[in-house]
Image (tube, rainbow, N blue to C red; front, side, top):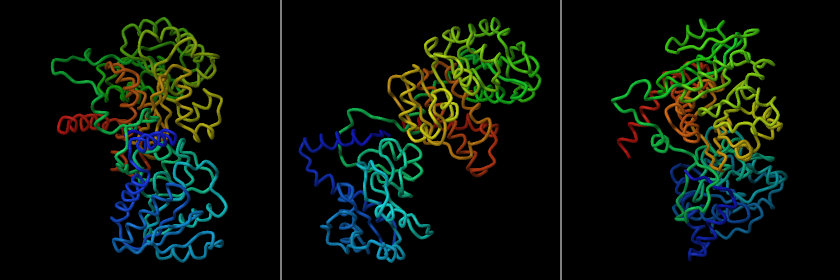
Length: 499
Protein backbone atom coordinates (compact mmCIF):
# COMPACT_ATOMS: atom_id res chain seq x y z
CA UNK A 1 0.00 0.00 0.00
CA UNK A 2 1.35 3.40 -0.99
CA UNK A 3 0.88 6.06 1.69
CA UNK A 4 1.23 9.77 0.88
CA UNK A 5 1.42 13.15 2.59
CA UNK A 6 -1.08 15.95 2.01
CA UNK A 7 1.39 17.72 -0.29
CA UNK A 8 1.93 14.58 -2.35
CA UNK A 9 -1.83 14.08 -2.57
CA UNK A 10 -2.35 17.65 -3.75
CA UNK A 11 0.25 17.10 -6.47
CA UNK A 12 -1.51 13.91 -7.61
CA UNK A 13 -4.89 15.68 -7.78
CA UNK A 14 -3.37 18.60 -9.70
CA UNK A 15 -1.88 16.22 -12.24
CA UNK A 16 -5.24 14.49 -12.64
CA UNK A 17 -6.97 17.83 -13.26
CA UNK A 18 -4.24 18.90 -15.68
CA UNK A 19 -4.79 15.68 -17.62
CA UNK A 20 -8.44 16.61 -18.18
CA UNK A 21 -10.28 15.18 -15.16
CA UNK A 22 -12.51 17.96 -13.70
CA UNK A 23 -12.37 18.57 -9.96
CA UNK A 24 -16.11 17.94 -9.84
CA UNK A 25 -15.53 14.44 -11.22
CA UNK A 26 -12.99 13.68 -8.51
CA UNK A 27 -15.42 14.90 -5.84
CA UNK A 28 -18.20 12.78 -7.34
CA UNK A 29 -15.95 9.69 -7.27
CA UNK A 30 -14.93 10.36 -3.68
CA UNK A 31 -18.51 10.96 -2.56
CA UNK A 32 -19.65 7.77 -4.25
CA UNK A 33 -16.87 5.77 -2.58
CA UNK A 34 -17.93 7.19 0.78
CA UNK A 35 -21.62 6.49 0.16
CA UNK A 36 -20.84 2.92 -0.96
CA UNK A 37 -19.20 2.19 2.38
CA UNK A 38 -22.07 3.76 4.35
CA UNK A 39 -24.64 1.89 2.23
CA UNK A 40 -23.43 -1.39 3.73
CA UNK A 41 -24.88 -0.31 7.08
CA UNK A 42 -28.46 0.33 8.13
CA UNK A 43 -30.32 3.14 9.86
CA UNK A 44 -30.30 6.96 9.80
CA UNK A 45 -27.10 8.66 8.66
CA UNK A 46 -25.60 11.89 9.96
CA UNK A 47 -22.95 13.46 7.73
CA UNK A 48 -20.78 16.20 9.19
CA UNK A 49 -19.50 18.39 6.35
CA UNK A 50 -16.98 21.19 6.65
CA UNK A 51 -15.45 23.69 4.24
CA UNK A 52 -13.31 22.59 1.32
CA UNK A 53 -13.22 19.46 -0.79
CA UNK A 54 -13.55 17.07 2.15
CA UNK A 55 -16.88 18.65 2.99
CA UNK A 56 -17.85 18.44 -0.69
CA UNK A 57 -17.12 14.70 -0.60
CA UNK A 58 -19.45 14.38 2.39
CA UNK A 59 -22.13 16.50 0.77
CA UNK A 60 -21.97 14.35 -2.38
CA UNK A 61 -22.27 11.19 -0.28
CA UNK A 62 -25.32 12.69 1.46
CA UNK A 63 -27.00 13.39 -1.87
CA UNK A 64 -26.32 9.91 -3.23
CA UNK A 65 -27.56 8.20 -0.07
CA UNK A 66 -30.72 10.34 0.00
CA UNK A 67 -31.36 9.51 -3.66
CA UNK A 68 -31.18 5.82 -2.75
CA UNK A 69 -33.87 6.34 -0.11
CA UNK A 70 -31.64 6.49 2.93
CA UNK A 71 -32.60 8.72 5.89
CA UNK A 72 -29.79 11.32 5.82
CA UNK A 73 -29.12 14.54 7.69
CA UNK A 74 -26.34 16.88 6.62
CA UNK A 75 -24.82 18.93 9.44
CA UNK A 76 -22.51 21.63 8.07
CA UNK A 77 -19.73 23.68 9.60
CA UNK A 78 -18.71 26.85 7.74
CA UNK A 79 -20.30 25.50 4.60
CA UNK A 80 -23.27 26.66 2.55
CA UNK A 81 -25.00 23.40 1.59
CA UNK A 82 -25.88 22.77 -2.03
CA UNK A 83 -27.20 19.24 -1.88
CA UNK A 84 -30.96 18.67 -1.74
CA UNK A 85 -30.71 16.99 1.65
CA UNK A 86 -32.16 17.85 5.04
CA UNK A 87 -29.53 20.22 6.46
CA UNK A 88 -28.66 21.84 9.76
CA UNK A 89 -25.95 24.49 9.93
CA UNK A 90 -23.71 24.49 13.01
CA UNK A 91 -23.66 28.29 13.03
CA UNK A 92 -27.40 28.17 13.77
CA UNK A 93 -26.83 25.63 16.56
CA UNK A 94 -24.27 27.26 18.90
CA UNK A 95 -25.26 25.12 21.88
CA UNK A 96 -25.26 21.98 19.69
CA UNK A 97 -28.76 21.12 20.89
CA UNK A 98 -29.98 20.18 17.41
CA UNK A 99 -26.86 18.08 16.88
CA UNK A 100 -27.57 16.22 20.11
CA UNK A 101 -31.12 15.39 18.94
CA UNK A 102 -29.86 14.15 15.57
CA UNK A 103 -27.19 12.05 17.25
CA UNK A 104 -29.83 10.36 19.40
CA UNK A 105 -31.25 8.63 16.34
CA UNK A 106 -28.19 8.37 14.09
CA UNK A 107 -26.94 4.87 13.34
CA UNK A 108 -24.00 6.06 11.24
CA UNK A 109 -21.91 9.21 11.64
CA UNK A 110 -19.73 10.36 8.76
CA UNK A 111 -16.90 12.81 9.42
CA UNK A 112 -16.20 14.99 6.37
CA UNK A 113 -15.25 18.11 8.30
CA UNK A 114 -11.62 18.91 7.53
CA UNK A 115 -9.63 16.26 5.64
CA UNK A 116 -5.95 16.68 4.74
CA UNK A 117 -5.86 20.47 4.96
CA UNK A 118 -6.16 20.72 8.74
CA UNK A 119 -3.24 22.23 10.61
CA UNK A 120 -4.60 23.99 13.69
CA UNK A 121 -5.98 22.39 16.88
CA UNK A 122 -9.61 21.32 16.66
CA UNK A 123 -11.35 23.38 19.33
CA UNK A 124 -14.22 25.80 19.88
CA UNK A 125 -17.45 25.01 18.04
CA UNK A 126 -15.74 22.50 15.76
CA UNK A 127 -14.18 20.74 18.74
CA UNK A 128 -17.60 20.53 20.36
CA UNK A 129 -19.05 18.91 17.23
CA UNK A 130 -16.29 16.30 17.19
CA UNK A 131 -16.59 15.54 20.88
CA UNK A 132 -20.36 15.15 20.58
CA UNK A 133 -19.91 12.75 17.65
CA UNK A 134 -17.43 10.72 19.71
CA UNK A 135 -19.86 10.18 22.59
CA UNK A 136 -20.04 6.45 23.36
CA UNK A 137 -22.83 4.49 21.75
CA UNK A 138 -22.99 0.79 20.99
CA UNK A 139 -25.41 1.41 18.12
CA UNK A 140 -23.37 3.93 16.13
CA UNK A 141 -20.83 3.29 13.40
CA UNK A 142 -18.34 6.06 12.65
CA UNK A 143 -16.84 6.64 9.22
CA UNK A 144 -14.21 9.26 8.35
CA UNK A 145 -13.60 10.69 4.90
CA UNK A 146 -9.90 10.57 3.98
CA UNK A 147 -8.44 11.53 7.40
CA UNK A 148 -10.33 11.82 10.70
CA UNK A 149 -10.80 15.41 11.79
CA UNK A 150 -8.14 16.34 14.34
CA UNK A 151 -5.52 13.95 12.93
CA UNK A 152 -2.53 15.55 11.22
CA UNK A 153 -2.47 13.98 7.76
CA UNK A 154 1.33 14.14 7.56
CA UNK A 155 2.38 12.91 11.01
CA UNK A 156 -0.57 11.24 12.71
CA UNK A 157 -0.30 13.71 15.59
CA UNK A 158 -3.44 14.73 17.48
CA UNK A 159 -4.11 18.35 18.38
CA UNK A 160 -7.29 19.17 20.27
CA UNK A 161 -10.36 17.04 19.65
CA UNK A 162 -10.18 14.23 17.08
CA UNK A 163 -12.88 12.09 15.50
CA UNK A 164 -12.68 8.40 16.42
CA UNK A 165 -13.59 6.39 13.33
CA UNK A 166 -14.31 2.71 12.96
CA UNK A 167 -13.53 3.01 9.24
CA UNK A 168 -11.65 5.64 7.28
CA UNK A 169 -12.25 5.83 3.54
CA UNK A 170 -8.95 7.16 2.17
CA UNK A 171 -9.44 8.91 -1.13
CA UNK A 172 -7.09 7.64 -3.83
CA UNK A 173 -4.24 6.80 -1.46
CA UNK A 174 -3.95 6.28 2.28
CA UNK A 175 -2.49 9.25 4.12
CA UNK A 176 0.37 9.08 6.60
CA UNK A 177 -1.94 10.19 9.41
CA UNK A 178 -4.24 7.23 8.71
CA UNK A 179 -1.44 4.72 9.13
CA UNK A 180 0.96 6.13 11.73
CA UNK A 181 0.10 6.24 15.43
CA UNK A 182 -1.45 7.97 17.23
CA UNK A 183 -3.55 8.89 14.18
CA UNK A 184 -3.95 5.25 13.18
CA UNK A 185 -5.77 4.67 16.46
CA UNK A 186 -8.39 7.20 15.38
CA UNK A 187 -8.66 6.02 11.77
CA UNK A 188 -9.75 2.45 12.52
CA UNK A 189 -9.83 0.18 9.48
CA UNK A 190 -8.56 2.01 6.40
CA UNK A 191 -10.28 1.39 3.06
CA UNK A 192 -8.56 2.96 0.06
CA UNK A 193 -11.03 4.23 -2.54
CA UNK A 194 -9.85 4.00 -6.14
CA UNK A 195 -10.44 7.42 -7.67
CA UNK A 196 -8.54 6.53 -10.87
CA UNK A 197 -5.74 8.93 -10.00
CA UNK A 198 -2.21 9.01 -11.41
CA UNK A 199 0.54 7.13 -9.60
CA UNK A 200 2.43 9.30 -7.09
CA UNK A 201 5.81 10.70 -8.09
CA UNK A 202 7.04 10.08 -4.56
CA UNK A 203 5.69 7.92 -1.75
CA UNK A 204 6.26 9.01 1.84
CA UNK A 205 5.53 5.61 3.31
CA UNK A 206 4.84 2.00 2.38
CA UNK A 207 2.52 -0.32 4.24
CA UNK A 208 3.70 -3.84 3.35
CA UNK A 209 1.08 -6.52 2.76
CA UNK A 210 1.53 -10.31 3.01
CA UNK A 211 2.54 -10.78 -0.64
CA UNK A 212 5.21 -8.08 -0.28
CA UNK A 213 6.77 -9.88 2.68
CA UNK A 214 6.58 -13.30 1.03
CA UNK A 215 8.54 -12.03 -1.96
CA UNK A 216 11.34 -10.80 0.31
CA UNK A 217 11.97 -14.08 2.12
CA UNK A 218 14.91 -16.26 1.03
CA UNK A 219 14.28 -19.69 -0.44
CA UNK A 220 14.93 -23.02 1.28
CA UNK A 221 16.57 -25.36 -1.28
CA UNK A 222 16.30 -29.05 -0.50
CA UNK A 223 20.03 -29.69 -0.94
CA UNK A 224 20.88 -27.54 2.08
CA UNK A 225 22.75 -27.84 5.34
CA UNK A 226 22.92 -25.62 8.38
CA UNK A 227 25.74 -23.65 6.80
CA UNK A 228 23.44 -22.74 3.91
CA UNK A 229 21.29 -20.61 6.17
CA UNK A 230 23.98 -18.67 7.99
CA UNK A 231 25.35 -18.26 11.47
CA UNK A 232 23.99 -15.59 13.84
CA UNK A 233 26.20 -14.33 16.65
CA UNK A 234 24.29 -12.94 19.65
CA UNK A 235 26.33 -10.73 22.00
CA UNK A 236 24.71 -9.88 25.30
CA UNK A 237 23.35 -11.34 28.48
CA UNK A 238 24.13 -10.67 32.13
CA UNK A 239 23.25 -12.15 35.49
CA UNK A 240 20.37 -9.66 35.68
CA UNK A 241 19.04 -10.50 32.22
CA UNK A 242 19.90 -14.09 31.27
CA UNK A 243 16.63 -14.62 29.40
CA UNK A 244 17.20 -11.95 26.73
CA UNK A 245 20.00 -13.68 24.77
CA UNK A 246 18.05 -16.94 24.94
CA UNK A 247 15.00 -15.29 23.36
CA UNK A 248 17.09 -13.57 20.70
CA UNK A 249 18.91 -16.81 19.88
CA UNK A 250 15.69 -18.80 19.61
CA UNK A 251 14.09 -16.06 17.51
CA UNK A 252 16.96 -16.37 15.03
CA UNK A 253 16.61 -20.15 14.91
CA UNK A 254 12.83 -20.01 14.49
CA UNK A 255 13.14 -17.69 11.48
CA UNK A 256 15.44 -20.21 9.85
CA UNK A 257 19.07 -19.34 10.52
CA UNK A 258 21.24 -22.44 10.48
CA UNK A 259 23.28 -21.91 13.62
CA UNK A 260 23.32 -19.47 16.53
CA UNK A 261 26.24 -18.75 18.81
CA UNK A 262 25.52 -16.85 22.02
CA UNK A 263 28.45 -14.84 23.37
CA UNK A 264 27.50 -14.35 27.03
CA UNK A 265 29.20 -14.20 30.43
CA UNK A 266 30.41 -17.67 31.35
CA UNK A 267 28.47 -17.49 34.62
CA UNK A 268 25.09 -17.47 32.85
CA UNK A 269 25.75 -20.14 30.20
CA UNK A 270 23.88 -22.84 32.19
CA UNK A 271 20.87 -20.56 32.63
CA UNK A 272 20.71 -19.60 28.95
CA UNK A 273 21.34 -23.19 27.81
CA UNK A 274 18.47 -24.46 29.95
CA UNK A 275 16.09 -22.43 27.78
CA UNK A 276 17.95 -22.68 24.48
CA UNK A 277 19.44 -26.13 24.09
CA UNK A 278 19.95 -25.72 20.33
CA UNK A 279 22.32 -22.77 20.76
CA UNK A 280 26.12 -22.99 20.85
CA UNK A 281 28.05 -20.79 23.24
CA UNK A 282 31.04 -18.52 23.45
CA UNK A 283 31.55 -18.17 27.24
CA UNK A 284 33.22 -14.87 28.01
CA UNK A 285 34.80 -13.32 31.12
CA UNK A 286 32.53 -11.11 33.16
CA UNK A 287 32.58 -8.63 35.98
CA UNK A 288 29.63 -8.15 38.32
CA UNK A 289 27.70 -10.53 36.08
CA UNK A 290 28.21 -8.50 32.88
CA UNK A 291 30.58 -8.62 29.90
CA UNK A 292 33.82 -6.65 29.85
CA UNK A 293 36.45 -5.68 27.29
CA UNK A 294 38.45 -8.76 28.32
CA UNK A 295 36.20 -10.70 25.96
CA UNK A 296 36.94 -8.50 22.93
CA UNK A 297 39.61 -10.72 21.27
CA UNK A 298 37.32 -13.75 21.40
CA UNK A 299 34.44 -11.70 20.00
CA UNK A 300 36.54 -10.42 17.10
CA UNK A 301 37.46 -14.02 16.25
CA UNK A 302 33.79 -15.08 16.46
CA UNK A 303 32.71 -12.22 14.19
CA UNK A 304 34.90 -13.58 11.41
CA UNK A 305 32.78 -16.72 11.22
CA UNK A 306 29.36 -15.11 11.69
CA UNK A 307 26.86 -14.28 8.98
CA UNK A 308 25.30 -11.57 11.15
CA UNK A 309 25.55 -10.26 14.68
CA UNK A 310 22.96 -9.00 17.18
CA UNK A 311 24.44 -6.85 19.94
CA UNK A 312 22.69 -5.82 23.12
CA UNK A 313 19.98 -8.20 24.37
CA UNK A 314 20.36 -8.45 28.15
CA UNK A 315 23.80 -6.80 27.97
CA UNK A 316 23.24 -4.66 31.08
CA UNK A 317 24.50 -1.10 31.23
CA UNK A 318 27.74 -0.80 33.17
CA UNK A 319 30.88 1.19 32.48
CA UNK A 320 32.47 -2.09 31.35
CA UNK A 321 29.73 -2.93 28.83
CA UNK A 322 29.77 0.61 27.44
CA UNK A 323 33.54 0.26 26.95
CA UNK A 324 33.01 -3.10 25.26
CA UNK A 325 30.48 -1.65 22.82
CA UNK A 326 32.83 1.29 22.09
CA UNK A 327 35.75 -1.06 21.40
CA UNK A 328 33.57 -3.41 19.38
CA UNK A 329 32.29 -0.74 16.98
CA UNK A 330 35.27 -0.76 14.57
CA UNK A 331 34.97 -4.54 14.21
CA UNK A 332 31.26 -4.67 13.42
CA UNK A 333 31.88 -3.83 9.77
CA UNK A 334 32.94 -7.45 9.30
CA UNK A 335 29.34 -8.67 9.26
CA UNK A 336 25.79 -7.21 9.10
CA UNK A 337 25.08 -5.95 12.60
CA UNK A 338 21.93 -5.22 14.56
CA UNK A 339 22.02 -3.28 17.81
CA UNK A 340 19.20 -3.38 20.35
CA UNK A 341 18.37 -2.87 24.03
CA UNK A 342 21.39 -2.01 26.20
CA UNK A 343 23.55 -1.99 23.10
CA UNK A 344 21.57 1.11 22.09
CA UNK A 345 21.79 2.55 25.58
CA UNK A 346 25.56 2.10 25.41
CA UNK A 347 25.65 3.90 22.04
CA UNK A 348 23.80 6.81 23.62
CA UNK A 349 26.80 7.23 25.96
CA UNK A 350 29.37 7.20 23.14
CA UNK A 351 29.84 10.62 21.60
CA UNK A 352 29.53 10.57 17.81
CA UNK A 353 29.31 6.79 17.59
CA UNK A 354 27.77 6.96 14.09
CA UNK A 355 30.94 8.59 12.78
CA UNK A 356 32.93 5.50 13.78
CA UNK A 357 30.69 2.89 12.24
CA UNK A 358 27.52 2.88 10.13
CA UNK A 359 25.50 0.20 11.88
CA UNK A 360 23.11 -1.57 9.47
CA UNK A 361 20.08 -2.00 11.79
CA UNK A 362 19.04 -0.29 15.04
CA UNK A 363 15.84 -1.34 16.80
CA UNK A 364 14.98 1.24 19.50
CA UNK A 365 11.74 1.56 21.39
CA UNK A 366 10.70 5.19 22.10
CA UNK A 367 12.64 5.33 25.39
CA UNK A 368 15.85 4.14 23.73
CA UNK A 369 15.24 6.50 20.80
CA UNK A 370 14.91 9.33 23.30
CA UNK A 371 18.29 8.50 24.84
CA UNK A 372 19.92 8.21 21.41
CA UNK A 373 18.51 11.49 20.05
CA UNK A 374 18.00 13.71 23.09
CA UNK A 375 14.36 14.21 22.08
CA UNK A 376 11.54 13.68 24.53
CA UNK A 377 9.41 10.59 24.18
CA UNK A 378 6.43 12.87 23.57
CA UNK A 379 8.21 14.57 20.66
CA UNK A 380 9.15 11.20 19.18
CA UNK A 381 5.65 9.77 19.49
CA UNK A 382 4.03 12.85 17.95
CA UNK A 383 6.06 12.44 14.74
CA UNK A 384 7.24 8.85 14.60
CA UNK A 385 7.79 8.84 10.86
CA UNK A 386 9.65 12.16 10.78
CA UNK A 387 11.94 11.23 13.67
CA UNK A 388 12.73 7.75 12.33
CA UNK A 389 13.53 9.00 8.83
CA UNK A 390 15.61 11.95 10.07
CA UNK A 391 17.89 9.84 12.23
CA UNK A 392 18.08 6.92 9.82
CA UNK A 393 19.61 9.38 7.36
CA UNK A 394 21.91 10.95 9.97
CA UNK A 395 23.15 7.62 11.31
CA UNK A 396 23.32 5.84 7.96
CA UNK A 397 21.26 2.98 9.41
CA UNK A 398 17.97 1.20 9.01
CA UNK A 399 16.01 2.29 12.09
CA UNK A 400 13.14 0.20 13.44
CA UNK A 401 11.23 2.54 15.76
CA UNK A 402 9.24 0.00 17.71
CA UNK A 403 5.76 0.48 19.11
CA UNK A 404 2.21 0.47 17.80
CA UNK A 405 2.65 0.69 14.04
CA UNK A 406 6.43 0.19 14.09
CA UNK A 407 8.23 2.43 11.62
CA UNK A 408 11.12 1.06 9.55
CA UNK A 409 13.20 3.85 8.01
CA UNK A 410 16.28 3.63 5.78
CA UNK A 411 19.07 6.15 5.27
CA UNK A 412 18.00 6.64 1.62
CA UNK A 413 14.57 7.95 2.62
CA UNK A 414 12.53 4.77 2.30
CA UNK A 415 10.07 4.16 5.11
CA UNK A 416 7.48 1.54 5.96
CA UNK A 417 4.79 1.24 8.61
CA UNK A 418 4.15 -2.25 9.95
CA UNK A 419 0.46 -2.98 10.42
CA UNK A 420 0.82 -6.31 12.22
CA UNK A 421 1.15 -6.60 15.99
CA UNK A 422 -0.97 -5.39 18.86
CA UNK A 423 -1.01 -4.55 22.56
CA UNK A 424 -0.26 -8.13 23.60
CA UNK A 425 3.33 -7.50 22.45
CA UNK A 426 3.77 -4.80 25.10
CA UNK A 427 5.57 -7.16 27.45
CA UNK A 428 9.17 -7.88 28.42
CA UNK A 429 11.25 -9.88 25.98
CA UNK A 430 9.27 -9.48 22.79
CA UNK A 431 11.85 -6.99 21.50
CA UNK A 432 14.56 -9.59 22.08
CA UNK A 433 12.65 -12.01 19.88
CA UNK A 434 12.41 -9.33 17.18
CA UNK A 435 16.19 -8.84 17.31
CA UNK A 436 16.62 -12.56 16.75
CA UNK A 437 14.23 -12.61 13.80
CA UNK A 438 15.92 -9.70 12.03
CA UNK A 439 19.40 -10.98 12.90
CA UNK A 440 18.48 -14.42 11.59
CA UNK A 441 17.25 -12.97 8.30
CA UNK A 442 20.47 -10.95 7.98
CA UNK A 443 22.44 -14.16 8.47
CA UNK A 444 20.42 -15.77 5.67
CA UNK A 445 21.65 -13.10 3.28
CA UNK A 446 18.86 -10.53 3.30
CA UNK A 447 19.87 -6.89 3.06
CA UNK A 448 19.23 -4.72 6.14
CA UNK A 449 16.11 -2.99 4.77
CA UNK A 450 14.42 -6.20 3.64
CA UNK A 451 15.37 -8.03 6.83
CA UNK A 452 14.05 -5.23 9.04
CA UNK A 453 10.75 -4.88 7.16
CA UNK A 454 10.11 -8.62 6.85
CA UNK A 455 11.30 -9.39 10.37
CA UNK A 456 9.17 -6.72 12.01
CA UNK A 457 6.11 -7.78 9.99
CA UNK A 458 6.58 -11.47 10.88
CA UNK A 459 7.14 -10.62 14.54
CA UNK A 460 3.87 -8.68 14.63
CA UNK A 461 1.99 -11.42 12.77
CA UNK A 462 3.27 -14.01 15.25
CA UNK A 463 1.95 -11.77 18.02
CA UNK A 464 -1.40 -11.55 16.26
CA UNK A 465 -1.62 -15.35 16.16
CA UNK A 466 -0.94 -15.52 19.90
CA UNK A 467 -3.50 -12.78 20.57
CA UNK A 468 -6.05 -14.76 18.57
CA UNK A 469 -5.63 -17.62 21.01
CA UNK A 470 -5.01 -15.77 24.28
CA UNK A 471 -6.41 -12.27 23.85
CA UNK A 472 -4.73 -8.89 24.17
CA UNK A 473 -3.12 -9.57 27.57
CA UNK A 474 -1.01 -12.35 29.01
CA UNK A 475 1.29 -13.05 26.07
CA UNK A 476 4.80 -14.16 27.04
CA UNK A 477 7.71 -13.43 24.73
CA UNK A 478 8.34 -17.17 24.44
CA UNK A 479 4.81 -17.66 23.10
CA UNK A 480 5.90 -15.97 19.87
CA UNK A 481 8.64 -18.47 19.09
CA UNK A 482 6.59 -21.43 17.74
CA UNK A 483 4.41 -19.03 15.74
CA UNK A 484 7.33 -17.53 13.78
CA UNK A 485 7.85 -20.48 11.40
CA UNK A 486 4.08 -20.85 11.02
CA UNK A 487 3.80 -17.24 9.86
CA UNK A 488 6.72 -17.71 7.47
CA UNK A 489 5.19 -20.89 6.05
CA UNK A 490 1.78 -19.27 5.62
CA UNK A 491 3.27 -16.27 3.83
CA UNK A 492 5.24 -18.41 1.41
CA UNK A 493 2.37 -20.82 0.77
CA UNK A 494 0.07 -17.88 0.07
CA UNK A 495 2.60 -16.49 -2.40
CA UNK A 496 2.87 -19.84 -4.19
CA UNK A 497 -0.90 -20.16 -4.58
CA UNK A 498 -1.67 -16.53 -5.49
CA UNK A 499 1.57 -15.29 -7.03
